[in-house]
Image 1 (cartoon, rainbow, N blue to C red):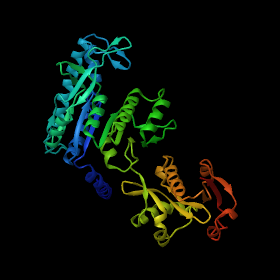
Image 2 (cartoon, one colour):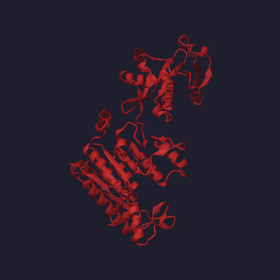
Image 3 (cartoon, rainbow, N blue to C red):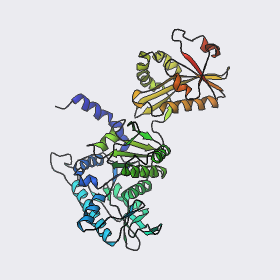
Image 4 (tube, helix red, strand yellow):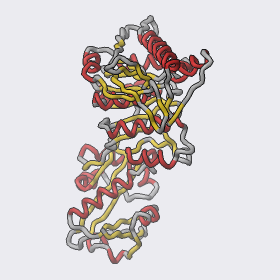
Length: 438
């Protein structure tokens, strides 16, 4: 039996994403493992759904397992240097066979339209061609990589024409040179270059891992390119090679102008839909602009702020605030919004006569703690205080004194509070007073 209430709730909550993504270009890259492990049929259903929602899709497939199998069938060994395949003439034949076979299989799966299946009535058109212009990688440290190539440019105008015509564009890890040669090019390189050339809305990289996890196993849902690069350098010994490659590609893609890159576990059924149409997703996003960006609160945010701080008020961590109190002070609040929900907030109350300001009502939703939103709000309020000539920032807290002290606050006496604030001090709560010079 279908849980109808949950279905209706989910379907309604997906509407903002559907509206936001319609007409946008997504580049999706996946390895040949998706074909080899018989996972592509289910994935094709999700691609068909995205296509029906008006999303313009470029699919880039790899074919490493298929190449390896053909080399073994011919009794040939794989040769690598600098983590890249050395593609001689025999290996190139295997590359072309594998890429062609995988490409045909994908097109066949996307062409299905059987009744009573998710593909019914899809009528997907798949366009392929010589959209990738490549050049030889050449000789590196004395090693000739033969027909291993690198992307020279992407014929983005031709791809865009196909996308505007309603087709899904399918790219293989094959590049073509003006001299008529064929080169074995990495799927990630093709995908990242294509996403940058098309100024894609999203770069979606499917990998056999559940996103990036810290050493304690906690999933990092979102990182900036700099944070991702730092993790890549720190975790080279324990991150899977495929995950490292995808992470490096995502970083390059973001720095080339694509705002958001996602690492998604292809082993999870429906992973693409879960990442795109749920608030938190199931993978890791590399973003150049934390899309939960902090902004000034408005009167429309009061309901969200009340819902956020209510559990903390119940626990006695925050002082209770009425809706009327928030309506008066809403101009002093900053919020962090994620997909229409307020997930963090803080207020700044200046006392310009004394040259001090108060950081108040700092709250982060339990699902988003330890992800840096508290620090982001603190930084915003410190910047606002400096801009107004405020030299010191103070906070009253009953539970988070260590958190503030680790960020430069130190204990002070109640008597050091501004006169107007001192008269409001609640001695029953016995809050600690911490101050930070700016």
